[in-house]
Image (tube, rainbow, N blue to C red; front, side, top):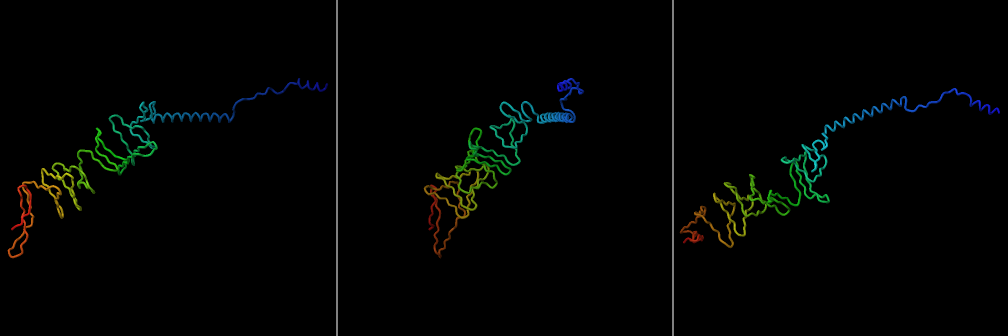
Length: 276
């Protein structure tokens, strides 16, 4: 009985404390830090957006491309000067119609032709000192396809109708030369000269030397020989002179010298006849 009264007493006693209220949210210095970070994030977003707009404006970004670079149906189109810092791989490079295509480099420009195994087959190097080409054969042709010049390991062919050498010292051939015709320009001299060795001209069907509008001279240091093994040597001229032939002398008291005179037949043949 006393225990029941105590329990009832406690339950019927009025509470002196009011209802408890729990606050939900961030307050104090945490709230101020959150507002600061949100403001800083908004400033960074605005700066980033402004920089992006400035880059798009400076680089001239459009729907068709960027700056001098345009994207077309046929590929990429570059206007103005372009600089490539890394290797450029392209199927075709061409200029605009009516304009030239320039390749500029501070050192050299190299063009390589590769096979399927990325092995260099042909290489063209244009440097500050020389232009070098590596390949099995080098050819130069006209627009119609006629061969003008070709070179390989075996021979060098000049397909032009006329080969002109404009050097002041002429042309030097260390070894033999094979040609059907050697001719100088009109009103110019033609000289075949060997300063230290001999000069030999050979042909299976004859050698013809013709000077239609001038003189012809053959000069040597020791001996000039005209030799025909199976045929004859013809000197066809209106006047033939031998000005420096030695003259023989005859004295009745001394020993008789063998003196010969040159006789000419009707057919032009020369022969020696002893002077009586």
